[in-house]
Length: 218
Image (cartoon, rainbow, N blue to C red; front, side, top):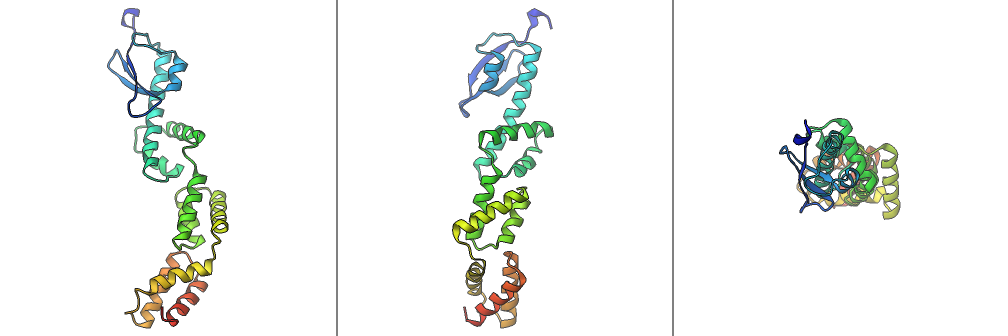
């Protein structure tokens, strides 16, 4: 490309949707979205400025990472997500594993993405719904949360809420038993036991609680 054909920054404006994002229109028709940091780094401050090949490479890379990070932010806006869950989503984009990793690293560094926070919130919410600690741990591991983080989050939630596994098992059993009053005793026992096992309670406690609750006439 000759000097007269140099690539130019045709237009520069801040994104109306995302503060800190800039929309760049290049003289060859390409449009890029980058963060404010790369604008300062490259020194691009006004339309008409030439864009050197090394700067273009930097802008193209930043455009991909910014797009991935913004996609991840959109997913996070819909609810709690772990890093692995976002990775699975972003793999559907035209991006390399390294690019996805860099985008998610940025979100972690900014504090927006945190498996620890997800684990803590999920553990507390699930325990309050009557799930057993074993079930909660299983679900968090499926979301990609690391084992030590899972154990710490569940332990903290149990301590904070004063969780008692037997009392929790009995409470969910009582609620479930109300829908089994029309069943014959054997069927009710089988269904209640299966329900408690699916909630993550161990066989010994589940059998005893199911038998006691049904015997008490709940």
